[in-house]
Length: 60
Image 1: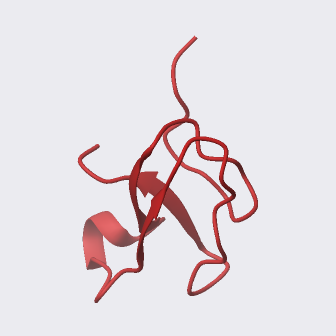
Image 2 (image 1 turned 30 degrees about the horizontal axis):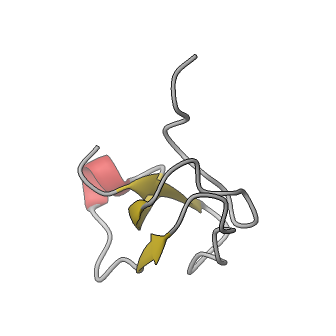
């Protein structure tokens, strides 16, 4: 079973790492100054800047 790609606020981090905000239109428009957080396995993801964004592991 693979790791999820995107995570919602309140989800638990599957692994230690740095996670970055990403969104539906980020491929086309990009996100200016996205939030970044470093979480340890099991810590909950914080809120994103807006409801259309999710968290993804940096480098993926």
